[in-house]
View 1: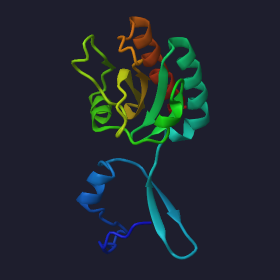
View 2: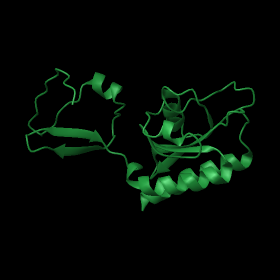
View 3: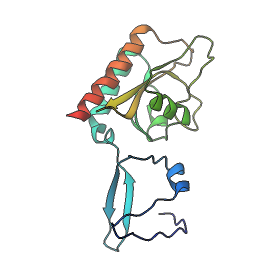
View 4: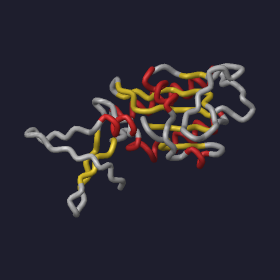
Length: 180
């Protein structure tokens, strides 16, 4: 664990304020669920809760089937990281942090589709120069919880209408699974 040097007091209602700098760095927004862990030595740890992460084993299988159907690498992401990847080069994506661009697509609640010529390229994860062909936000009970991304092949071909629909259906299905 990394020390920040920031100390906060608990108020009379048991609340602690998480500093703005930490919330921004960790991408914690108002209303985000935090899971609380305790250690034997007295440590209390707050961790962002990922409802999509609860579906991880299922998401891996779904991503694998989807990757075979559309012949592209498929990523299933929560709001922060890739939780499942299937297809070529899947290992280089797994557990990577999602990019600011993908975060904006999720916030916008609209499906991203790559255009011919690469005018609107979306890099779905930080530090990797691979681009999304499709990114469909996962919505559960009206909240954005993640995204399903199809990675554009090296050839740069744009996705078909069928590929777009497959990603949207996958996102809708995963969202429904979280609601149950």
